[in-house]
Image 1 (spheres, helix red, strand yellow):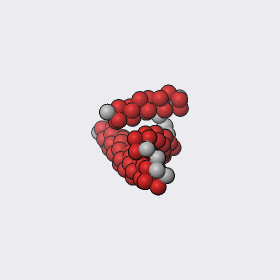
Image 2: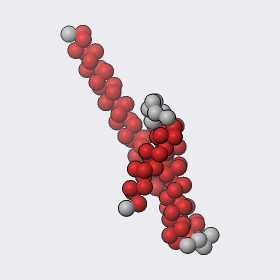
Image 3: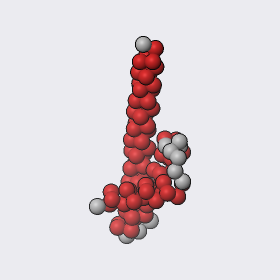
Image 4: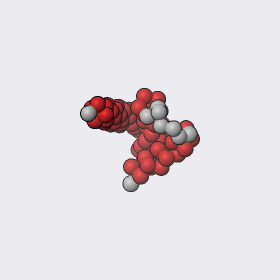
Length: 98
């Protein structure tokens, strides 16, 4: 009986951790989207950079910000090398362009 309660408690704890990571991921992604839009407006409307170049630059900077925030605060215990994580993250993020 004690073993079942312990397993339930661990399962509940792990579920809370996963839910918290998803919420944090969505918050960081939302912040990054707002930063991306703001930077695109600044680059294209105020710096008079070509619209498509402004979108590309802001998207690339947004990817770096998103990766950095998620790595530092959300997925810090993932046991993979930093370069490998960044490469995987950018490959997945690049599919967002299409």
